[in-house]
Amino acid sequence: MNSLVIDIGNSLIKIAVFSAQKIVFLTKVDNLNNIDINAIVDKHQTQKIIVSSVRKTVEHSLSALAKKREILFFDNGTKTPINNYYQSPETLGLDRLGAVVGAKTLYENNAVLVIDAGTCITYDFVDEKSNYYGGSISPGINMRLKALNQQTGKLPLVHFDDNFTANFGANTQQAILSGVINGVLAEVKGFIESYNLLYADLKIILCGGDAPFFDTRFKNSIFAHQVISQPYLVLIGLNTIVNFKND
Image 1 (cartoon, rainbow, N blue to C red):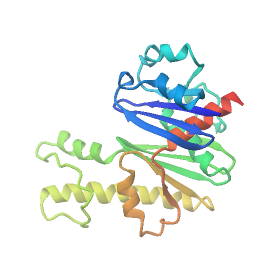
Image 2: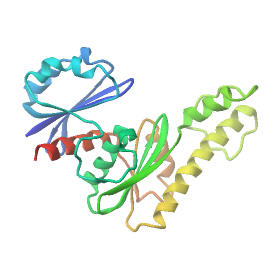
Image 3: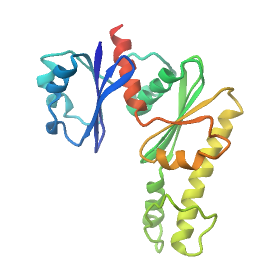
Image 4: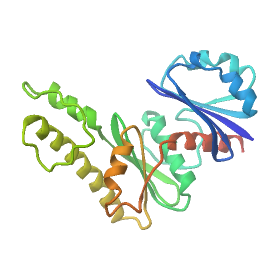
């Protein structure tokens, strides 16, 4: 039985159709009005639908679809196949929760650290028994670059250059890139090393817009065998949740 997964972010909407755990259709749009969701449902004969959204008007946008199929609107009260011990579950980002479920879908018997490198960098850990207690949130690369410009009087706004590899900068622009890029790489490596000391057979999954940058930098590192880049981790998690709810 196929399922339709709709992940609505602030700027981009990801729409996927799953057959079991395999993505058979995937597209990205900036507005639901730019795509015929009903046609996708009919073409792929989807029976299960889940929607995760940060936008408040989404239910109205999908009203026509709701007349044809039952829709699960994912929120912090939705049942999931993990044991969620987060102390303020109502404030837990749905993308973080979906990513953790996706991680356990891929590595059911492993402890997994999910690193989502986007506007912010989030680190979320779930153990081999599917227990989730929380994680960490820090500024993303572009947020750090903007903060240096906005919170100081003279430092310029420097744009992210993923080809920068120097250990230090010979001018102010390079010094900013060196501080931010080398600093964030050291941070990520530090998190991985700290979890490695505590958990055997740890898997690390990278997702988010800046994941390719980190993935490239880790290719030849000691973490290469552990780090897996998975751009559709949240979609995988949402698919698992809608099937878990319907079981």
